[in-house]
Length: 81
Image 1 (cartoon, rainbow, N blue to C red):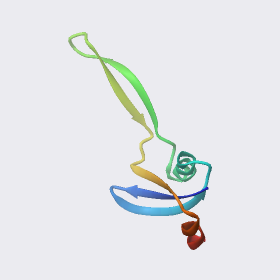
Image 2 (tube, rainbow, N blue to C red):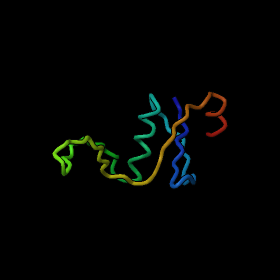
Image 3 (cartoon, rainbow, N blue to C red):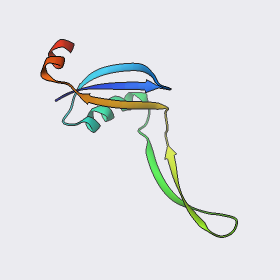
Image 4 (cartoon, helix red, strand yellow):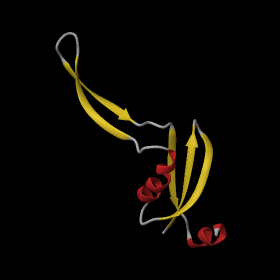
């Protein structure tokens, strides 16, 4: 299937590309590699001053880009080739 992957930085489209992939996530992963290491998320427990523990989400390798993949219809795919 063909997907149109749109890459944005601070809300501005910086790239659009047609990618052949089995699903949207795979299409995004193919394009994301060009913008740095993939983002990873880690969940940790942080101990507060009063001894309580609070869960936190830590994001590593955040590159500031957002990705959206939309499956193209056969007509759209033909028009973009």
